[in-house]
Image 1 (tube, rainbow, N blue to C red):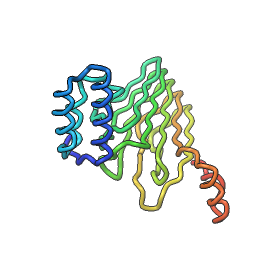
Image 2: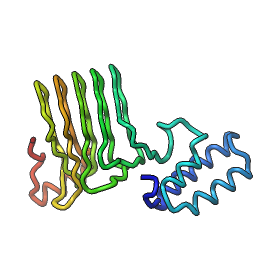
Image 3: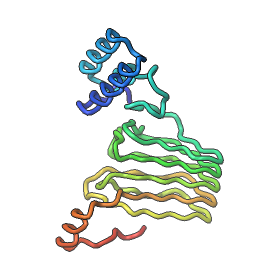
Image 4: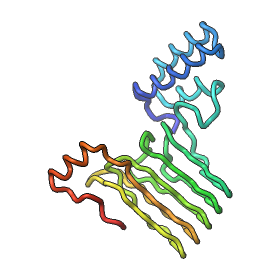
Length: 195
């Protein structure tokens, strides 16, 4: 995951964090200059993550490269922003809620598997338009709701595993008014069918 190529937007995210650290005194002018140069020269996401690791906590990093399981025990765990989604991501929710926002995430492959164990908990997923979500896991006294707008050749998120007394929901963000109006003008259905 650390070897994935960085984009210009990734570099700018890191440079913005470095600028804030300079402004509030966490970096000297020399440190800022050196790290900014390295950020603009970085080719991979791994090179970028090392530049801000000591400036803010993990959840506030501009880019997160992390393949550890996402777990929530009687609480809530949220992963959002620019992060790299591994090919198989373990999820554990014991009477807690796991929220995954994939709108800015980098998908390692076109088919991602969320290997879930949910007992009395919830998994909530937000995906960008064009991503398909399939719930293939065993659900025992659990609910599932998928309201996304997949594209024919778009990536797929497969939610597998076991859900016991839990729920899984996936949605795409609401469209802006002009997009909804244009969609109606084209004759698209107002809501995607529930699965």
